[in-house]
Image 1 (tube, rainbow, N blue to C red):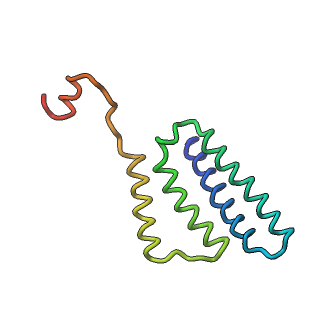
Image 2: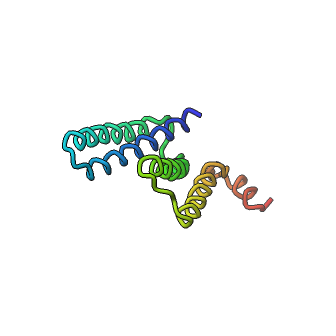
Image 3: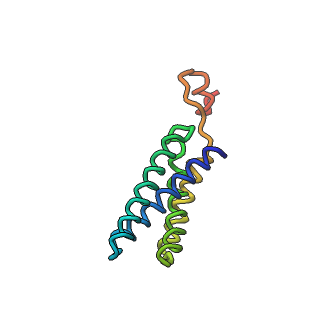
Length: 125
């Protein structure tokens, strides 16, 4: 659960930081633009920091990260920009989330060089 929360926090920081930078680029009021840029930069820094502080090697959770990132970006797009995902985006998202779940839930056997274990895993008893 701790790893999930680190990855979830990273995706929220990334999506929110990106949304703020998009708002900064399109803002015509300089004080608001600077505020958006600074806040977005802080959130993107928190994203990188939280992801790198997660108590697991990133390669082991990349599927979870990508699946959560897709979901959080869609929610952020809707909340911040009132952009509803189209059917192709939703179908693609189902595939992304399914792939993320597959990489997390599929239990792979441990790597070994023991010929007896390899023979058993290959079905050569």
